[in-house]
Length: 627
Image (tube, rainbow, N blue to C red; front, side):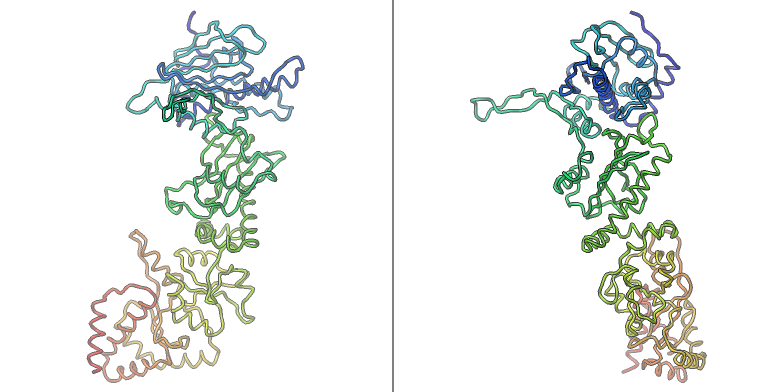
């Protein structure tokens, strides 16, 4: 018996496949089980087209056995098997696939689901094996053949014995080393875990000899270990069952088992798409966000299956970032894969699936808003910021999809969408008013909010740091411009009130000049008629608001910005007469008062004081003078 060399440039290609194509060693079991499933599929299909073949499909199975003492892992099937010629052609020529050839021969026929198409999956076994043996007997043949190889140096073929048709793949597992604990692949628990993870929905039972500890008959309290044959896989995935016959409890149990969430999902989305492209989707909208959801460690993606075989644990290409909270599975035989099955090729099929998934998610959120508004509020509390990021990060490109899903608390004590706000606007209102702050209670106390509410207008409360950036990207909604009530652009006064205020400010320009000498950081000082009881407030001018200044300066970067601030003084407050008196009698005292007023305005806005000790001393000093 002489050793034969692999056809093609075997050594380079084999080395590439073992060391480069597959990045995850554990997928070898998925590949071999998929090949076994293919072999059974082929025999089953032939039996349907050949009336002389008497095959009992109820006996189709894949067997797994472990021999720890000899470090042997065996995967057996009772599929079509291979002749010596087929063994040499399929295993001796790397990248030649019998499954692919079978599929091509029958491509005009429907309902042929062949998983293995690339002819290299089998060779992933060498990642964990020092020797691979394949004993196969073709259906209808009286003889079996042994194919054996230890890797790139070639292989041998010789006659062998096998009781019936089918194939045994016998792996001699490598010895452990400092980098890898190969003995894991001889662990019953670990092998069961890999089957459940990757091959749980293979359509044939995967059976395994399992050791179980059972009570001894007639001897209370004593136990013995027995070997039993156990079916490991679930066979039929939930998403392939008729959804009209699936209970809510079954959906929820699948979700909790698959995605390890202790809370029930808010929404389940189960649909099929058929036609030129076919796939099945089972998606879930969670109730709570994972602990790491808003961190860099979180990985988005749906589980991708091909004919029930797990291909990718998290396929990020199937979800846009703004819907990264969605969990679920996609099962499609139309998805083109590279030869390792680990990475999707970027093409039209993938984009079409992703587009359909996105459409279904949008529809599900719309239904939740309409039919279960309390559930939607729960959802938005957990994932609303992700929708906001979707608008902001896309520079508004996705606003048509996402803007109607945003919710904001308002000065009226309700939670509204932009549409609901606009629908309830006063007839004379031309803009959408908003205010920013850490909490709704703090926003409510802002002098500018009080002023706008007194005029009968509703104000949106923005409490998340990304909110104002989102509204700036949006610019407007239904031609209604977003306006910050703390912006100098806001003016709700009448023509007469404007003229009167302009005259007062013009007459007081010398007063403001002295005050500004003490406040070089601010852009301007002026009287306002917008305030009710508050003495002062800060208004921002330009694109950067006070809230933006706080947000950006709180970030762990060297970039710091300053809003262009205007100190506004309530023209009707008694502090005005005090300022005018100081201007006439004591301009240095006027400057001290100016610093105190500015500090008060900054505190109201939640801005820090650059010199708290100085302000404290000025307050105490002026209080002492009053005595």
